[in-house]
Every structure is written in C-alpha cells, then in structure tokens.
Image (cartoon, rainbow, N blue to C red; front, side, top):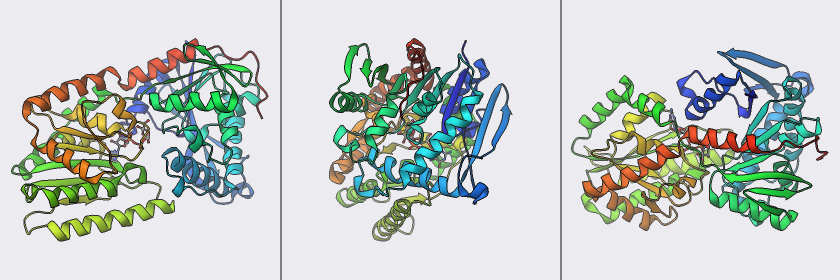
Length: 470
Ligand code: GDG
C-alpha cells in the first residue's frame, strides 16, 4: 500500500477530537500507511530570514504512526499568501462575492512564492510511490510546482470551497494560471455536481479540453480526472460524541431551560458566506409576521471567531451585533430574549447536545462548498422526535439533503415562512424527512468521501515525466 501524504494549509493532530471529522477520516489512511501530513504551522515569524520565505525550518512531530511536518511563514508571506490572495481574493470570488475581493496585484506573487516554498520543502521528503493529496484553495498551484521539481507521484487535489462559473472565475487575477495549476493534478475533486460542471465548462471553453468520458479529460497535453466527491461527516464519531457526558449534560439542561419554548439553532464560523445577517433578518420577519412565535421561539446563534484580521470579517461582526441588539430591543420581554448570540467557540463535545435540543436547525449560507453543520444537525437528532433542517439551496449539501426545507436565504420572507413551517411541522412528516436525511448522511459519510477520492486517484495514471508547467 502506498504511503499517503496529505498537504493542507493547516495541519491537525489526528489524535485530538477537536480536530474534527476530516482529520479523523484522514487519520485512518495516514495511520495505515504511516503517512505524512504537511502544512503551515500557524506561526508567523516577524522578519526572520529577512522577511522572505525560503529558509524556513521544518518542524517535525510524530503523532502515533503519522508524521506531522510544518513550517512557519514570514510576515510578508503570510500577509500576501494567506490574508491577501487566499482569503482576500480566492475566498470571496469562490463564494460569488466579487464586491468583497481585494484585487491587490502584489498578492499573487506571495501566493506563488509560498506554494513554491511548500513544494521545495516537501519534495525531498517524498518517496517514489507516495500518493499525495493536496487540499483547498490555498494550495492550487502546489501540484504544478511539485511537477516542476520532477515529482512523478500521483497527486490529487480537493477543493473544499465552491468553484464559481467560468465568467466569475475569470475575475481572479491569474485565473488561467490557476486553472493550469489545477490541471496538473491527476484528479481534481469538487464538492458538488454544480462545481464539477463549472470546472468542465471552464476547461472546455478556455482550454479546449477533450472529453475522454468516465470523468477523464485531455487538456494542456495531459490526462486528468475530475469529479464531484461531496464531503460528509464521521457519523460514528459524531454519535459517540453525542453519547458523551458533555453533550448529554448540555442537552438535558437546554431541555429543562426551554421546556416551554422552541429552540432554533445556528452554528457557524463568523464568515460573510454563511449569511448570518440575512438569517437574522428572516428571524425578525418571522417575529413580525407571526405573533404566536413571541415568547416562544428562541434563536441560539453561535458565531465562532474566524479570520479576524480580514476587514470584511470585522464588518460582518458589527452588522450582526447591531441586528441582534435591535431584534432583542424591539421584541424582547423581561422573561424572553428572542436571540441568544455568542461570538465564541463552543466545545465540540457539546455541539451534539445543542443540536439535539433544538427544534429547528438554521443552515442558510449565501454560498457554501458543502456545509457540515447541516449534516451534524441531522445526525444529532432524536429519530423518534427529530428537529427540522432549514437549508439554503446555495449550500453544496442541498444536492444531497433535498428533504430539508430548502430556502433562498436572500428572500427573508420566504425563509421566515419556511421557519414557521418547520416550527409547526407534524411529527410524522418530521420523522419521514429525517429518515431520508439521515440515510444520506450515513451513505455519503466522510469515509465514503476519503475512499472514493483515493480509489479514483489510485486509478489515475501518474504522468510519465514531470511536466514543465511554468
Ligand atoms: C469549509 C467549507 C465545507 C463551527 N462553529 C463551531 C464549530 N464549528 C464546526 C462545525 C463544523 C465546522 O466547524 C464547519 O464546517 P462547515 O462545513 O460548516 O464550514 P467551513 O468551516 O466553512 O468549511 C465548507 C468544509 O470546508 C469541509 O469541506 O463543508 O463548505 O467552507 O464541523 O461543527 N466547532 C466547535 N465550536 C464552534 O463554535 N467546536
């Protein structure tokens, strides 16, 4: 069995529960193959080595059979690669927010520099029959940089965020270079059929790719595969978490505290893609239109801090604070606050308890690659008395979770209607919908995702020689 080498912006210790489903699923393969996980340490070194990357030292840490190898970034590289091009350009454009992109021309050089450094540092650690799996938008050109250094191993890439339609992708400075980079992999995995279709359309129109059938393409003088591999959660791990003392204790406490009220829950990173202000406006609409919800419906919104050094994130924080304040100010009573908003991270071990105590799960991103909260909410429910999932049609998860109440989050009236329907839904219908949703979550879990991606990658032929891409 070939060794698996995972490369991602950040590296997680797969033995820690806080690492979440992805790390746990990857850990299975990494453990079995004595794998290697390579990425940024999360540390920024102030002007060490003259501010430039290149001399960064590798930190090696053995986590059971898995070797974790990380490197630090200089301030200059971090700002251009991470804050600039990755989170200031690629993240907003991939989430259809051209208005929030910061098209500063110097970022791309830093992005490329860091990808080159990753390749330079990783290449000497590779064995000839390794299988390499690169993750996400921070590292799109890594495959071509590795190829340029002569790496002939099989290399797969998975994009966790949406891939926008060709014309929108074309707004990214260096989009053609990025797409060439994507095409240097042996397998490109996307979250949804919609994203996959965008990829195919782009390479057909812009690069005259030839469709070889069975997901294979001939483009830029090489053959690659592409497909949709919707990511799932580790259902067993999440069930075990739900059985744990912390989740059960929280569940009981919430049930006691809200015995005469209905709970709605939202759990998101505080990110503009998650549609939090739109969700609060829909909730306000619900309170305005349906007085029966007063003193009854309570929305618990967890917004865990994220990327606080990017301006667009501080803007969304202020919008949220103001909306929550005005909803509570206008509708609140001495014994009832409609919104309980927390700008804090809740321990992962408690999340299943919070989901299970809630009658409605609100997952209403404006755009999302997949959205794992939707799946966690479904799995955490009591099958005999399940809550209802209100899900944005713009989350990748909507392709698999069609039995949720699908909404357009831009339409606050429509979303309010759906929430009202969810609050009123008879038990029988809730059970039928939940059974179908749970079956999807179990069928397309994170192990299916890992297995199907790696099986497909193993089928792919590694290029005969490193391709001179650059
Ligand atoms: C990217 C893509 C894609 C959230 N708040 C807390 C907390 N979380 C956990 C959730 C869930 C995870 O974070 C969020 O996953 P999502 O899928 O919703 O979103 P992103 O972070 O944007 O992830 C996304 C994903 O990659 C995987 O491919 O689905 O589309 O954007 O697990 O539970 N966890 C804890 N406390 C919190 O307050 N412990």
